[in-house]
Each structure stands twice: as structure tokens, then as C-alpha cells.
Image 1: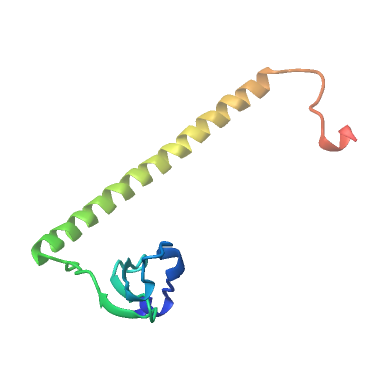
Image 2: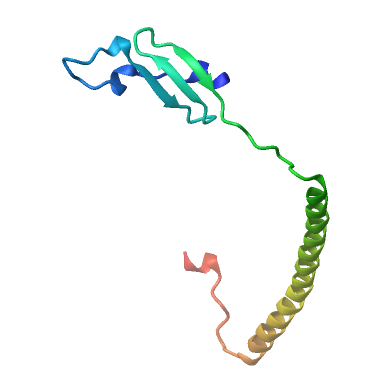
Length: 122
């Protein structure tokens, strides 16, 4: 019902221009984009004359099924945590191996010129 106050319909945009049309006798049916309610609007008074909210199905149809889903979600969260923890541990080993490889390359590369420093470029 809160959408009725905020919904403004410009009936001039909904009407078609015809000499035989009587815009005051028309009733427009509009679907609210916010709550999907069906509104019937009188063309003459530009007021909502009927409001019909769509039926909403219950959030939980069967309590036993909902409990089973919650138990399954706890197991899935635990599995995701275990995988994340394992990848974190593996990441440490990968970084350590990369560091050792780069350190070994740096020791093998015996160039005579030291690397340039950022303030040497000025």
C-alpha cells in the first residue's frame, strides 16, 4: 500500500489522441514496478480506485526441509573454510619457493653495474 502514495501516473502519456475517445470514462490498469501490485486508476479523477496485491508464497513451506538445508549449509561452509585454509598454507610454500628461485637467480647474476636507483634518474 506504501507504493500507491509514491507512484505517480501521468495519464496524458497513457491516453491516445482520438476525437472519439472519452478520457474521463477510462479506467487504466497499471502494474506497480515496486511491489507488483495491480492498480486501477480512474482517468477523470486520476485517483487509485482499486489496489490488488499479488499473493506471496510463504517463505518456508516445509519446516523439515528448511532444517535439512540449514544443516547442509553448515557442512558447505566448513568445506569452503577447509579449502581456503589449505590454499592459504599452500600459498606460503609457493611464495617461499618463488623467493628462493629469485634469490638463486640474483646470486648467479654477477653483473658489474648496480641496479639504478629512482633518484639517479633525475
